[in-house]
Length: 290
Image (tube, rainbow, N blue to C red; front, side):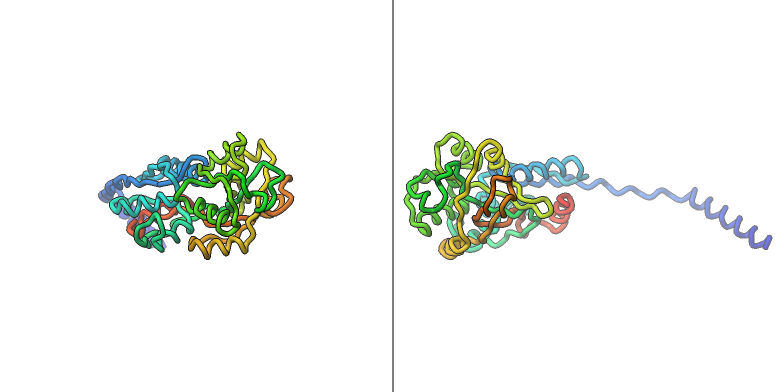
């Protein structure tokens, strides 16, 4: 036993001595900063707010990834930018929706040829687009006939869909104009239009949240919605070739004044990237989002 203890003590002493004289490991060189760009949308939409928030979080916490968030004209414009500037595809990710991607894949205007390079990175909400009014007497599609209606900016799939819905599917004659979500909210408040398109996001585990401009309107005015039934959405998809789905917001999901379901069309809001962006960068972005 004594010899065993003596050997163990000797072995421990030699091990510690060896550890003390071991050469320190060389430190790896710090990773070079990777500059990326995030194309969001116009001011007033949830994609704008979330994109700039994501960039702020990443820039403050990630050791080498940097994100420059930019305001843009929206989901179609973002895809057009990636199509027209192939040199940015490895470092740029962008907000878009399946409706815009369906236009790109088919080469529908404003795309001059099919673009199939977009890949989903992360979804942040399911959105339902609805037709909003402050006039309690406007209840059905027949009541919209002859009225002033503002939809989103030209080229946006929502603008194309609503114009086609109003004129081709519903057969109405309306005084149509275009604007941003903020512009639509202001025009409704100022009485410059009778009906406008706004949106509500459904965030899993959180609930139904109106986009910022719509929420502002809800806190100051009594709001009503002109429903778009599922059959009309399906007819719209068939005619336009733009992919959206029937969607509704259940009663009381927004506030106590919402006594009936609000019907419109829905799609997924998310961040996408071209297939040329490396798996490593996509992984770092999704990890940061998580």
